[in-house]
Length: 112
Length: 347
Image 1: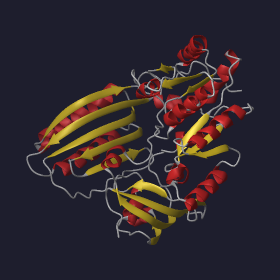
Image 2: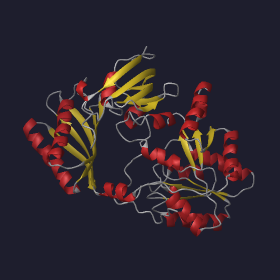
Image 3: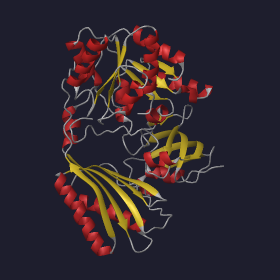
Image 4: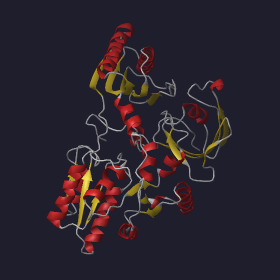
């Protein structure tokens, strides 16, 4: 069974709450999201916690600055279910997994 | 991008032409010669293009191409396919068309890939970049939302997809389709024909904050090759990246984002620094090499020349200090232009 490691495409469902208990997202009963592991596309702290998990595994994760995760602006409780792990294709490794819709408006010509 | 717009337009054009309707297509991209244009032309469908930027900043060209298609080919239906990153279409394209070309009815269809949509709608809290912002803004503008490539979903996934879209966009007219399937295309063209024009709200995008904020940023893109005499090029590259970030902090320059892609041929890593987050350096080097390629995209509140000098001086000093060699390729530094839509109608 495949495990989460660099250059794998990982499908996860998750429920994420902040320190106030507010639910930021909950797709545990819905469709998974996909990301390319090892490229810093998701929170680095979460990526570190997911490393090594296998398909079908669940994990309760607590992320905080006190745990050494300096990139956070709050504390988060995340329940994660790993649905699927597969090796990324060369194209995915090179170009990224999800569409790169730029949040930068325009290029040098003043237009997008 | 990659959501199947061009395929759907091609197949819808063929279907309508089969019914005796005069169809034309307008393609749009940043390049000068467009692949999409060739694709459509190949099917003998009248096609015009708007190049070098999106419809909003090239409204007059778009208007001219519409007129040309109407006059030259007596076109009744025009499919105008905008670049994937375009947004604010209602204010900058649709409303001006309504104002200046009163005989034209416009329907905005936004295509999304069923395989990507769940991630973009549900992944925002997890992603380091705000990858989903423009994506969601584009969906907001849709008269018709087409969730394409549903043939890749299982029945269970399809049911969950319908629930997801209903939850996120309860009032949106949504079609679930496979653009290669004839009945799906018929549903789309029927929905386009049946669509009743209603009041549309222009997007709320604060150009003063968003646009000017971007315009204050210097853009620096540089690709370098770093050669070491030992096998620690990856480590040296990572150290150089950290030093560049520190130098920017020391100079008290505000970071829009700093992105690096480091690649030694076997191991690749994307490293991002933004104003809000520190870094995503994993430091897990698993390979050994005497050469790495580093692609740098820096968006920093600074003068472009100053930013470029800062990096080039840093590289020069690092070469002396560490005894490695850096070859620089493709340097480009500039201030981006402020978005300049020809028209922007808010009400």
